[in-house]
Length: 607
Image (cartoon, rainbow, N blue to C red; front, side):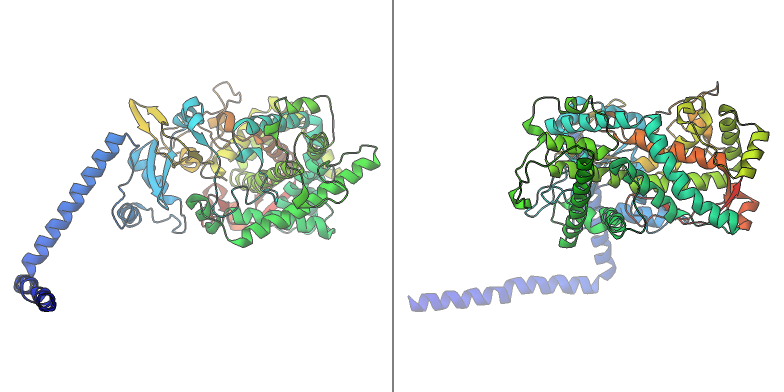
């Protein structure tokens, strides 16, 4: 037995040393003597394999009825397509830091709907406004998709702009809870978006906050003004007033810390680490949760402060879940899912001075939790604060770049408000602020067109909020084809491409066949009346569109009108004023999903 085992071992050791190495040696010897042939054979085999794989993927994609898109190769993924873009297609003047630039390339190559992969997650982008509206109105798509992104780790709930307990705003939830919470939001905002309220909040903010700074620097000191920080502060004050019925004190350490934490959370939402975790479904770094919790503590302090103010007026709103010895861990959980009745009915007959007051009433009635109220409050600052500020800065940029358009809008506003040249000169001498009446906006088609054209061209948000495809069965019919959306994929839409780069939309074109940079006729019909262009998708569409769009538009309309009626705005640099329509804005595209123009000084002159 030992002898047999020894012989078997010897044979097993000898076999690899004789037959296999001998064949390998022969092969290596042939390759060394036939190098050119070897390279040729290897090249032919590689190309043949790639061609076979490429067409196999085409056939597989067609059989599964997936949308067109770049081929995903073994080991290298979509690298060949990206190399093609960066080496052959990318325009020389395009920012190399722009992480979303390849999407324009894919839209041009593959068409209105594209399927590609990021972090091994299927991404479906819609590159056509009509298709986007069709998809968002399709109940079948709604039934198999959600807006919920689930992060990995222990927490399966809100990460940023959420309460410590993970309560999220209605924009991030689904089902019956979403229906109830959206109805509450719209019910409250319909009460607040009156001309009287907007004049009180937005009109007061621009006259109290922005105009004094402009007068001090540009009029008294005759210096150009970099106005970004003051515009951001004006937008913050507007939202602060809308929520808390008072302006924030610039010298108050607490409110300035609140502002700073909001800005920090906004910055984190655009960080690559947050975006990567969101797409991959992994747990974000701990410092992101820490930022959320710091802001959550500050919001609860403001809410308790507002309760104290209401008590002084005889209104006793409490969070019944807290009790005398309240602690976060002891808070009883409530949600809108527990209620079948219409929660908005509880506030139908009430008239409050702030958005928060309505939320505190619902918490007091045990209709929503304090955490839900906190999340709903935060979403206003998340989507309204920086977006409104940056959009207002774009208003100034286009006023300076197109002085003729600025003058046309001003002439319309003066005519509608019955301001004559003589009255204008008198008010100029008295340094009085000419007030804009929001109730007359319907008579100002050029003003409305100017605001909407600014919305289109600024493209503050480049890609719309994605929907997660949770189940099989999502299909899209478009131009004679039926496309299946893969389970687990993200369905999004390319606002940047549709708004400024697609020749298929309803935008005015120049002689070279490109979309004009800025043209009021995109939103004015042949009779001079305002028309809403259906290719504008900045606020989304359907039931999941941006519920705060009415507030955003009214905010920008009021601020733009006040600025145009009271100041002539021009570039601060004298050379740029020589030929303003030729000025090109340098934009920072390194931050994900955001276009931010380089800060420029402006020259404000009283008119």
